[in-house]
Length: 600
Image (tube, rainbow, N blue to C red; front, side):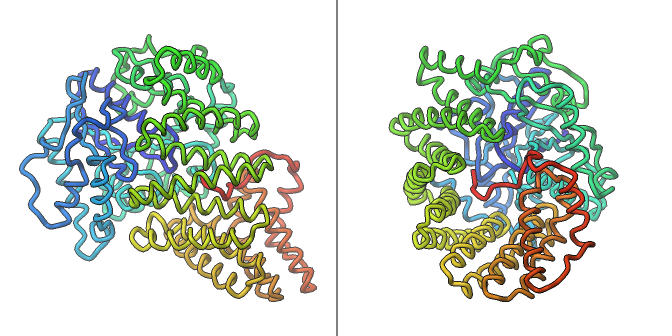
């Protein structure tokens, strides 16, 4: 049995959709397949395979994990935990559990990840080995396809290191996604080498690029991503086969009517899906090649939206959720391209539909409405419409409060995130006291979350502490601001030690924030040391990707030079010379930019 993990550092890349299509395609090729949902915090694989919230998904993986954690003997057979997928011959799914029922989130909160995988008597490796052996024994499967968690988590690391024979790694083009993916792959390489295991095959997939992008631009992107993944190290090139990534184009048309695309005898998905299928299956088969549209046949996003609107007129209940997905996706693409005003119209249309859907089925659509309002607020703020942005984020916070009260395990993180964004909007309107009160609530929530699951929420706690220090400093409470930013710096140091590629830029940003506060407190010597360290840490990232890291680099340089001037010092040419050379050689509007503070 060949086990393939589908992984992405960030969400929104179509990972689960790709896995579901690959599973059905392998079934059509005559293979026995088991699809395993290990994205425990956002389980959704069964729904991509045609199940709905009325189906019995069984006790799922969460039940098996808790049995193992309690020290109970494993079941004689895993067959009762598996569910056959309708319309297939040999495809079964092992769900995460009975989500979205409230009992599922209560069970999830009982799992002690550190004890399972990192404690003195950690038995996670034994559980992974038992799980794989049991699935193969019960089904005789040829393929095990695993939907892994996004980001960097204990279970996600276990999936990649212990369960998988190969990895499909989906990514976009954002710097944080590329660096995060690289950090995960490096950690996996090191772990397998330490354990004396053979190198694991990895196939990078550049996902959801805009349809119709020029071939030359796509090829440049593929090479740039390959170079970014292997930059400044030989480890990945030695351990993994890192060819230029495969490419998946944006699937707006599929999102309109996803189930029809997935369950049809001749799924009409773009050619990149077949490329992934061939790699997963060892280059053996191609399914329905004549039914896969060429790049020229793919509908433009505007056409997809028009098709979606027409389908909604024909059958609203069936097609409206799909149209909402297309509208949100296209709004995000336009926002990433800097076309905020165009994207805003689509976002507002999506929210209008979500309001009506939430009134009809609040348990299913209220979370989507809340997140869309959060994103709308960020985009309104980007257009300078601060009052409207505040109104949108206040509504999002109110919805998340309702959701978190009913299901705290599932929605407290979203409430904390939206409070963080609310504090930013309040601060932008000069309502400093309200902003401070709001960010303090966000910090308190993230402290609770980080205590129970540090690997998942320590980064969010550090970010919110940074924001809190900024608000305290704006109110002249500099001692408290300094104490708070020191805590943020300490957390980022810990994170950067274990995952430098992912968190060193954040550490640098926090050090720069510390320098600003120190300057305000007339501690210029300490401020110069702090911003100098920030530049040293940030410089390699800027030199590798100037456009992506330019904004914050310029801000750090200005802070450094003004602080040095205040102290009567010359700038250190060794420190800033390489940065100045790049800045002077590139125009001011060289695209890209650092990541925004607001979350989406």
